[in-house]
Length: 118
Length: 119
Image 1 (spheres, rainbow over the protein chains, first blue to last red):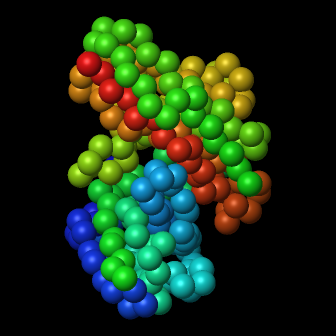
Image 2: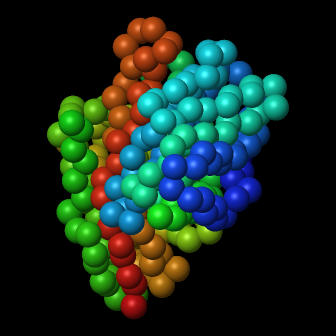
């Protein structure tokens, strides 16, 4: 079984600052996916960024980037030039890489509540 | 854009009732999932389905069942609702990758959630 740990229940930064959310995970799998999801007060869960474990290059999506350290089982999210709209719960999630198709559920961390102050 | 629609945003039921939560997706996705979300616990997988009439238990299936009679619809059933099932329930769907490993099990798309209260 996999576990995902987010050690920061809540973080608060000023607008325009850079913030890093931490995530560690434990698995015996070699191939898997890691995700960061954002859940604003509207409750819609939105995919922020995705990383395939076999890729050494860190994923980036505009102001969002990850630091993926496979050996350390660490997957942190960096938000640059933070904006008020980034205020949300952020969840780190793990998914096994299914071979030959078939579904697999996500294993989530407990979340980090990020507050961007004006 | 993928649309995952949950039939109710808020629902209030009584203990012992049989409760149905409905989820419909419009992107012909093979995979569908039910999670519950509780403060301080994150999201936990209840059940999932990778095809019509197929279902797999997730991490916390006790007290729940599911039904998938059509590809686009996945129902979560609380056979006899209890107060400890008061929670936010989230449905998700994803497509099945084609061939190349990098396209296996595409990211999940979530509905807006149903906040269920059992009194």
